[in-house]
Image (spheres, one colour):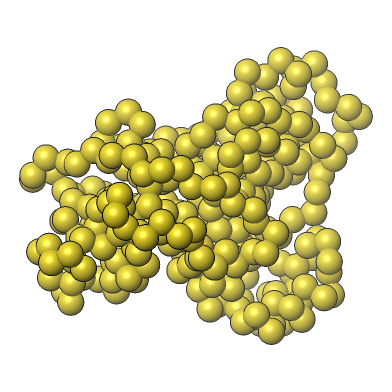
Length: 279
């Protein structure tokens, strides 16, 4: 590994340009991003292999909250490797999750974290030595990562700023107020999201509670909004802080801001392409 950050890194104007510089140098490092939500970007030989942020569920959170791996089994595996260096191999070796499935979950968590980090401007960043982390994939180029994040934002965007607003707004079920909606005919994933839209949870909170990706939950929320089944929290709603389970105990969540009015699509414009990545 190259000793110390070369000059191109010190002049990087944003995270994408920083990752491009790391790619050209085939660096192995961890980029610590400060801000809300902030997080860590893990780079190996110039490729991004993992990202972790309080803004989206990690590989650990997806495995535990979805029920793919039990808490007891996870604790047993975790006790064998406190650094996360060999967790992926141990999970597969014990037959707790298949190698292919873990790769899918690893990539899903990576793209989801990149999407979450893209919704806010970082305060600063620092390039450090590589930090061990849980992942099982060959890594992706900065160009592929940026293209996937752009695709997700374009799928969700109604107007400038609407995706970030949707991510941070506390949602409540509109059906509880007697508004129309055939809840029983909804797909199971929509019913799960609707059940967790209690006026205190944001899209992020719902994602952590269900063990699903932030982007996948936001797609479902957008569709439920278009059908009039959820709405931004009203001023008279319960204002207690969210109690959604986080899955990863080390994740620290920033306080959710007050609700923001969300743009509504015009009638007849409610469909969107199904997202390629899994939850």
